[in-house]
Image (cartoon, rainbow over all chains, first blue to last red; front, side, top):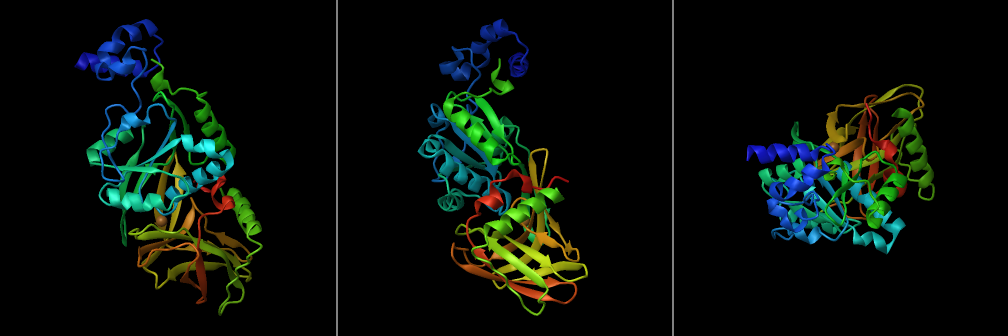
Length: 211
Length: 161
Ligand SMILES: [Cu+2]
């Protein structure tokens, strides 16, 4: 197991060993046989387990075949998280109906407060259709780690707590490949450019895909 | 960051000329404009409010507190983005230079309403009183609405510190 792990770690960095990658992909990614044959990295969502805002186990496989925009936050985040949602709302107006091909996923970093019901209420008022996900702390931590998302609970005097968190939107193409990131300080033209690229499938793949 | 905020401030002020909302009280030379807050979801207990204070006096002023019947506890916060990570922290007061302005906007300085008693719904207003060090207080009404484009689609209004 340790050997496989170290191989996986090496594969995550673009070492340029395509032959090695081909040879070991099937072994390293036995859990993802459906795509391992193409010598591709596993889907960005493989092996993740979370609950959707209707209280059901979320079917991550349902994301394959669709461009996906994932971001992390919490519903008790009154300032930054609504900004991201409103910007997506503006881009939806600008890009038009095609925008709705993008599946938007919001992952709560505050499972204690963000029950499926709380998430559902929160998502209903948003300018874009968003699937809210929550889960156990461990499952959320795994999802966050997958996207290199930092998150830390901070006590606030006079208030329970807040959560510092990476506020970027992560783009995943229809083949499940990490294909870009929109940071919170991006301007509207960058949002538009990257979302259109995501829709067209003409994205720069994240190094994690370049095995 | 200040320059960026100032630029966004002009945008915001420019964007709402059709509905000038100037609320004055006992201090005619402290003006609060463009006061608003996002709607809340049912069960959501916190909200953020935004406004611009114009200090038209010839002395510096300090915004030191706020009160409202709509929430249990009102604080001032600032959000910042450092290395892609958004952080929100409490601040005790905001200084407003003589002849200057204080702008609260998404992704930066904001009024934090904690323990919101009723859901904020679009079209409603929420009364808030702002308290200043000089003893002045200004009553404002936060208009509940979704962020308009100028306040939220430009990336310049987070705090780089
Ligand atoms: Cu806050």
